[in-house]
Length: 493
Image 1 (tube, one colour):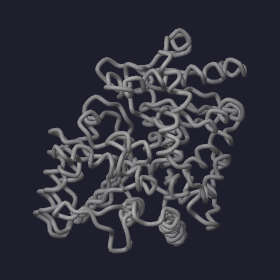
Image 2 (tube, rainbow, N blue to C red; image 1 turned 120 degrees about the vertical axis):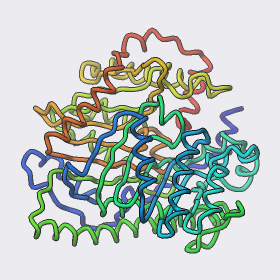
Image 3 (cartoon, one colour; image 1 turned 180 degrees about the horizontal axis):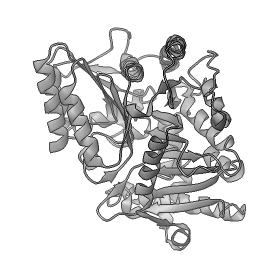
């Protein structure tokens, strides 16, 4: 019964280009012998050259909140926010009030906010939704825009009959990007109470005009094909878009949205070539490189997953990869690549069921923590059967009173004790991240010793609350109904 229900409410994924560059020549190199095996990155993504001093690694949720609050209070020209949703508790409300006060006192300040439609309007009837919280900010400022990304796959009868929460299975705006003037914060954390107190995630702060311009403009581009909210709480289409996403012909909408993002990347790539020449001519010392990665599977853009898969495929012998995700549900391609094609030693850190954000949830969602355990058990069985359990080790994070939401990757070249590369952003590396949701990560490469030590301390800070998972996974009892649900629905959570 449930299987038939899901087969009727969820369409197959539209796939077009794997990269948003449409043949743009991005070839280049780091020009450093040690990094030669990573030169392929220059052919797959934009590259923003930086100095390590422009980067700050945050490790605690309270510091994340303080940083965001400080940036929003002190912003002069612009604030850009892309998040799944904004919570409605005290800390989130205070952050919105800080933005409102700033924008009311500064007529030059422009505020662009992008959240997901289904998640952002959940609770509208009781006035407890993200949209309702932001409505006063929208009403009090002519320089504020609120956009709700609406997946083109939720339309017609599905949109009319699917209840709240269930409709979020179709696809979400999941990017976590926070811009204030020339600073951008990339994270996997939403703007919600738990993420500011006791839900562990990752956070990186970068001060760079070019990179902050890129991300602010990326938010604007997605806003163009999202639903706009008026001060009267009405929905309308963007001035650069003719129709709402659930009214436009689906294939046409996907094609136009794909073109919009690809053209944006193409334009930025051409601009970056000129900027690179400026760096070379001024002999600016570069020790860090940032490659922005995006994933918009339902819009035919599979950029982030293509780069991530290649990191596993191109990892050289005697290298090491530390991978973490709060929700262990890697795509089959990722699991097969790690288990059979990757030559790096791998440590995989995931949430213990007690550290899963769905622990204690009502209804079927309450079984999600054990569902992830079942997926982990299946993966461990595959590793043992293929004699890979010595090369790939599994760990679980468990910290009293905390939940675990961190995701990303640290890559160590042979002989390195600190990471040469990290992935950080919103992707959980699962089917949702690859094919359903909008995601954004950065791939950061650095030769700066101090920044590498900071990245290593970040990982050690996460690892210290973990323990080897193999024995407990094998003995952990998963309810039969959860096992059945995993077989049919693992691609939906």
